[in-house]
Image (spheres, rainbow, N blue to C red):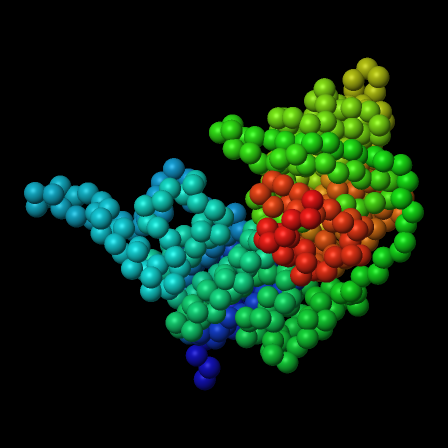
Length: 512
Ligand SMILES: Nc1ncnc2c1ncn2[C@@H]1O[C@H](COP(=O)(O)OP(=O)(O)OP(=O)(O)O)[C@@H](O)[C@H]1O
Ligand SMILES: [Mg+2]
């Protein structure tokens, strides 16, 4: 008999209006990397939440090492040596790395033989040892809020290891990382397997599955479709199976003639509250029918440029013109009204009101206008819903209860589709996309890329900020590379190779 760590048998879970998991059975062998692949809303996170004790299934059984168990809470999951890294990390930001790792499992010491207190020296030492043993470099006394995302992720992994997890579940761990960091995470995952751990990995990136996974289960609309031996399957096969249609992994673009200048940014600079320079002296123009992308390693000022254009942050100096007129004096709403649509990076905090229904979120920027609001200030919810249903259809936004669904209950990828739909519907002359396809499945990425190409053809000016170099190479007319807040080059995309862009991103050359 195979040596299984976990066996899920006939798991079913329904939410109002939707079957999130429909009779799913999978067996995970001890010491393998098992990938879960499926469209946005296919039920991946739900299935893992059941295994981690966050949700109770409506039906089905779970076996751990051959014994049937009932996992009623994450604490119970921990006791069964199951750990999970959620997509949104759960760390205490004012505490140190070691304090976070030991939280709830603190080593204690006795003072004068009877007063118990936390043995922080021992905790620091244990964390340092663990970090050395698994090659997960951290400094135990650093404070969480001062460390970058990739280190926080290592802390989450150490937290699982500290609790002796043998099965480690990762829900879209690479979605928050820059390309260079992804490789080192994948190496970490492989070395955990080589140390005898069992891994479940949820990701939308087919090449990551190809790179590390042994087997891959494909879910579609709650059902298990297939289980593949990754070595024998191609990424094209995986994509077709999960979406249920042929997906073009290569994209073609038509020639579009540029029109008038839409956005003109001149000598834009920004210093943060600690007077640290984040953007210095950046100038560029975007024309009608043009996609200009800003490439850069995460945190080199790209997002600050987008935020300054929308006035989410106030530029320290420089001027911004939209359709020939200065917008420097305008506030956020006035700029939006003047013709700027913005798909922000942080969809949960900036883009959506999670506890509102989908139809209110989809009309969030227009509710004060006719036909959504009468001259006398009365809201017309029927119009809200009519427009929402069109967007839901057009952008294939999937959820349990259509436009009435509370956004918080929607899958991550479908929340992202909702923001993109709303902003495109504004029909603005400039559309700013920051990481528009983060967390989306290959089919949804294909749809958004087609939409961007369509908008370009309609003569919109598009500013695209992305960490995905492939996305930038596929969609741009012009590429601006930013390093340390400064323009390294700004060139016709046809004249740049992916490697060259990569070199500018590392600050190796400067052509500006
Ligand atoms: N707490 C909840 N209440 C109601 N519906 C929910 C809840 N959690 C998930 N759902 C629904 O269950 C379905 C599956 O969601 P799930 O989050 O498991 O998808 P996913 O495969 O992880 O998608 P993504 O790739 O977008 O993260 C979705 O349609 C979602 O709207
Ligand atoms: Mg998910």
